Length: 289
Picture 1 (cartoon, helix red, strand yellow):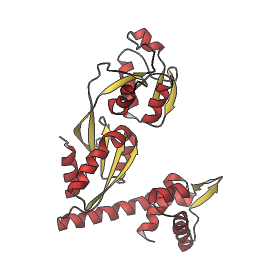
Picture 2 (cartoon, one colour):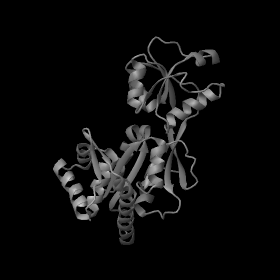
Picture 3 (tube, one colour):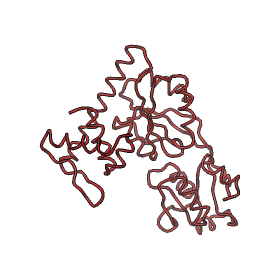
Picture 4 (cartoon, one colour):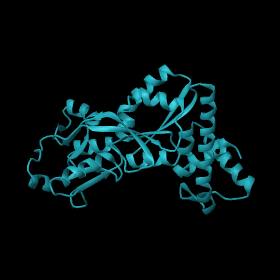
């Protein structure tokens, strides 16, 4: 069993699709299939079942997945420890970020850091705040960067300068100003676990209103999808100015500052882990307090 075989197995298991796993790993589909087949043959066990055009983990595969993740995490931490002893900023720093951070704010910071430290590779997984925090806790990411604090005492959380939030509306629609108008509004929202969705829910809660099935007309998995749905007239949403500003300037939708305090971003790390030189350098480059 090799680390590469484990890496391929995890990618296939997470995506439940050979082709998508191969694309994510920058490998051919035949190489991915061969790695999975070699694992199954070596241990005489079936890890995946065919389900239509996709695949699904067998019971053996489900039991093996957390073990495989643990092995890769320990191997990564061992490599990082050796680089630390050598005083070198090398290897790979694994980042997990929420969507607004990962798509609109972090790439520029990563590019600047890479110019300063070209020997250190950066990998980035983008999901939502909840999932990014979970990846850090599970040891699948060294550092998380998310929108807002996370209710998790096992994480060290350091504040970053964040973004401002805008209420976005379709062109021609009147912005709600009274509690009754807010109660009559219909919203396009991100999925549960999104920091942006939580901010909208908190804003409505302050007026004695709830964000629920009664006023959610659409739940979408990305900021871009939310913005496009609002442009098409589906409803209102609260979204980062980083996401909305270009569409507002282009006259595709309205963007209004409704007086919310600027939203902070946070750097997340597991408290019990020692901080490597690479992590220290990257967090300092982000300007975390």
